[in-house]
Image (cartoon, rainbow, N blue to C red; front, top):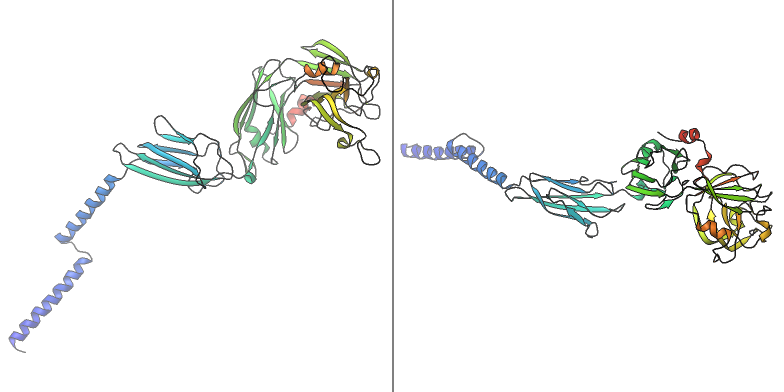
Length: 414
């Protein structure tokens, strides 16, 4: 090989080797050019970070939550910034009304959420430098199958008699009775001790040892939101109810003398002749609470087991006047226009109710039945004695007063 050819070969080899070195440098090196590239990228990352908002948005429930509360779950809060907008919609796009706090640090809906509904929340916030942050979440509220409610009486704002208990009927069987009872409080302005009693898995009544003090105020608080009443079944209620206790009226029916003495504050204000259940159909004895009032109503014997050989009711009166319910099973104190006036005060003839003289149409205010109806309210007590029948069951109506205090308190779960 000539010198000229060898020199050309060395140049080519040197060029090739240089190419290899350049390629190797692309995969990592510590020369000055590489350090310059890293510094440049760091500056880009730092600039991007400086453009990111410091505002931290939190949406509850967390994205993807199920069995969420319909009361307290939905909320948006922000730190290191202020909220600029929040929208909440149902899955079908319907907007849910909400309110931003005065300091713009929180937002919450202003309407009751619905069960078994999917909601979407979109929030925007800005930090002190005006940089914008966004957050989105979607959650589904508890379904009817996985929640329970307690239907309560008396109603909020009502005025009732001294015998009216707080009665709560749950739409699902409660197995965690203690947890549910801890979420329910009943207090009276009179300071009376109140205890609750479970009749079964679906009903709990609350009352004091003696009748409520007249002119007192009773407060019921339901704090059941999120309380597990049974496995996988949660409460959804969160509310406060108050009702007023009126004058103290207790009426005493004596089936032996066939008279009823109406008392207020322990003083007899009127004596009314009555006709109680016949010897074949005795009236329950015991303390009973008026739970419903009807100016006129239908009474059909077939609905309470009084039927003839053809299966029809032994009686079917479609306009019984001035009727007031004493038991769930069908005991009433009511007006009677079909009996002779001589019956009242002298003979017991009914199928178990307590009858007072009245006129058909319930439009004569001067009859004994009309007077008693007009002077009675839901929650008044009617005490029936000397019928020869058994004492009414405490859960047959609002008649827990027929249990002594020790028995009543023994039915508490806490």
